[in-house]
Image (cartoon, rainbow, N blue to C red; front, side, top):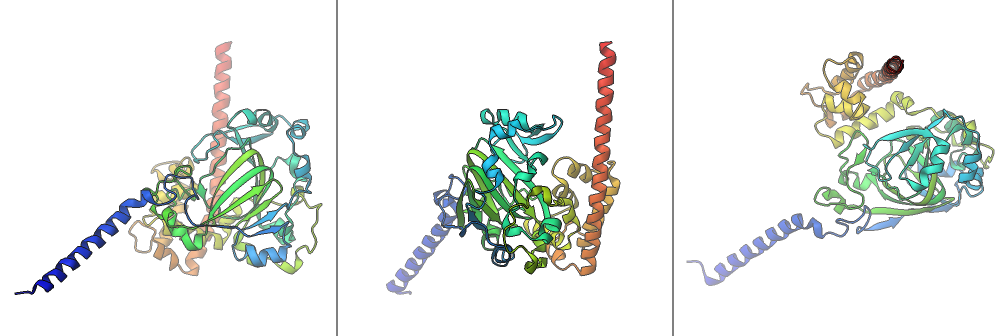
Length: 432
């Protein structure tokens, strides 16, 4: 017969086991009690401030310490002497001579969800109404303003501003905007000419897998940034944040793939400049400017567009590795929608029997390169194990896809123009 002491020991062990199980069980269910639950993105968790510098760093220092190392940095007061900072008032914009047919793209809601409609309108019409509406301009700097925007000293390398730049965007609103949690496939310097911005960052190397990018087609997370729900996005209860505040005159380097979310306050106007991260190590830093050239503006530089990145083997490889890491069941239909958008062309390519068979067959070549075991899924391991020859096939196919996409979209535009002309002719005949 077991002794009484033995029985008590067994009972105590059982008690400890039950306590442990309850503790584990409660920790799973108690995410709602974690700091930051149902608060805005970036609240409640451990956080750090981003490093900062008074003004721009010289190109050599910037590339060696931040761009190549993929580390963000705030440049305080870097553009306070620039023409745009001194000139850009609403009155200045309204006094410009701008052709009526020149349009800019306007978002219709200040809280970004990437499904909201956009409209095109005349820039000066936007300036007249933005303060009394939720309209938000997200468009490249209008050509008439390009000579006002100086090229940031930190990227004043001829190799960069003639070959590596991708695009610029002017962000203009009455404030109160908030972005989704997202990443960019490029490096970015954002300069603030009016208002204030708050940014929250997550280091992708440390916590990238904790942020659920449930919208891979746009490289963003669908979490409500005003009310983060840890039960839907449990990984966010474990991350560490970086916080920074931009004031008018500041610029901020946002590195490739750094996870971030942005809020703006007050009449808000910013311009960012994007360039190809994958070419940073190719820059001959000894040939970059040693002193700032204040005459170098947007009218003097070349933006090559995102299409050029279709032919960049490093960028393509990074993109496919990331896609398959985040989505373990990447089939052909998903790939089409991720590369070409959930709506529009992506939907067209994904459907059988459409008029885009040439596009579809070229994308199928890309998919088949990675689907080595022919199970209909592009797996992360297959992408990682792809040979140089396989990557060359993919790079060539992606370049051809870009050309085919441009042709196809041009054809769609022509068809739409013809439909509109026919509709106008029919309306005219009806009136007669």
